[in-house]
Amino acid sequence: MIRPTWEELPSDVADAVQAQCGPVLKADSATAGIMPGVAARLDLEDGGTVFVKAITDGHEAAALHLRERWAGWNLPSEAPAPRMLWADTVAGWHVMVWQHVDGARHADLSPGSLDLPAVLDAMVLLEAVLTPCPSGATPVGSNVASLLVKARRLLGGPVGDLPDRGLYEVAIERLDLSDLRGDTLLHYDLSAGNLLVTDQQVSVVDWSFAARGARWLEAALFAPRLVEAGHRPGDVDELLSTLPAWRSAPRDAVTGMAAAWTLFRRYKARYGPQEVRRARARAAQAGRAWLTYQQTN
Ligand SMILES: Nc1ncnc2c1ncn2[C@@H]1O[C@H](COP(=O)(O)OP(=O)(O)O)[C@@H](O)[C@H]1O
Ligand SMILES: [Mg+2]
Image 1 (cartoon, helix red, strand yellow):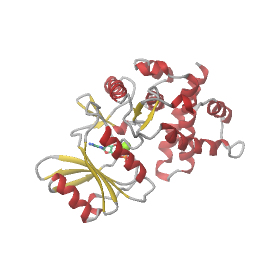
Image 2: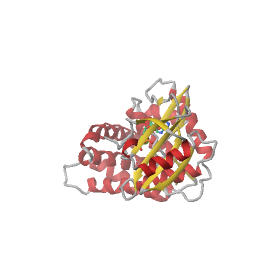
Image 3: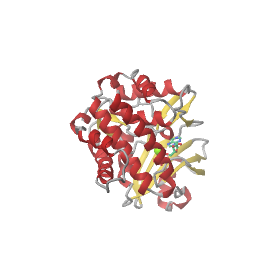
Image 4: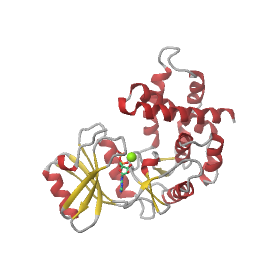
C-alpha cells in the first residue's frame, strides 16, 4: 500500500503539528499496516520523535481515525500503549500525534518466541485497566456486524463457491450477539504489527477498532493470529488459558466469532485489494483451522 507522506499534507496541517511539537526535521512513512492515510515517524528539531497519523475527512476510513482519536483521549495511563499527545481536525484532515515507541520491532508470535509471555502479560494488563470500559466507546457489535455482512455474502453465494459451507453456517447460526456484550474496552485488532516490542516490553498501537465488549473477546480474536504464526490450535487454547478472561468464554460465541473472522478474510482474499489477497488467504486458512478445532474439541 502506498501511503500519502508527511510532505503531501497541506501546510496548515504541518503548521498545526509543528505548533505542538516544534520543527520537524525528517519524516519516515510506516511501511507496515494496511490502512490508508498518513502514518509516519517525525524526527523533531529538539531530538525527540513522535508518530503522526492523518486522513482526510470524508475518506471511508475517517471514522476509524476518529475512533482511534477517541481511544487516545480515553486510554488510562496504565495501559501498555503510547500516549496520544494531540489530535485535531485541520484543513479537512483528522490528525493525531502519538508518542513514538523508539527502537521497537513487531512482536514475534511464532512458537517458542520470547515475545509471547510479554504479549500475554500485556493482554492481562489491558483487560485489567480497560475494565470497566471508558464511557463513549463504540459497541463491539458494530465491528462484528461488518464481519457478518461479508460472511453472509459468501454464505449466500452460489453453491460450490464456498468449500465447507456447512461448517461456517452452523457456527454463524449459533452466534448469539448478546454474548459479545461486556464492559471491557477491547483493542480488537492485536496483529503482530500492532504489538510493538522493546526489551520484551509490549506497547499496543493502532486503536482504530477499539470497542466495548466481552472481556474474553480479545483472546478469541487473537487466537487465529497465533495459529497463523505457526501454533497448533490446541496449543493456542493452552496458551490462552493463562488469561483469566479466556475461561469465561462461551464456546458457541468463540466458534461463531472464529467463523465470522475467517469468512471475512476469505471474502477479502477473493474480492479485496489485489495486494492484500494473499495475506488474507493465509489468515483465512489459519482461521479455518482454529474453527475446526473449536468445533471438534
Ligand atoms: N506510536 C508508534 N510508535 C512507533 N511506531 C508506530 C507507532 N504507531 C504505529 N507505529 C508503526 O507504524 C505501523 C502502522 O501504524 P498503525 O497505527 O498500525 O497503522 P495502520 O492503521 O495502517 O495499521 C505499525 O505497524 C507500527 O510499525
Ligand atoms: Mg496497524
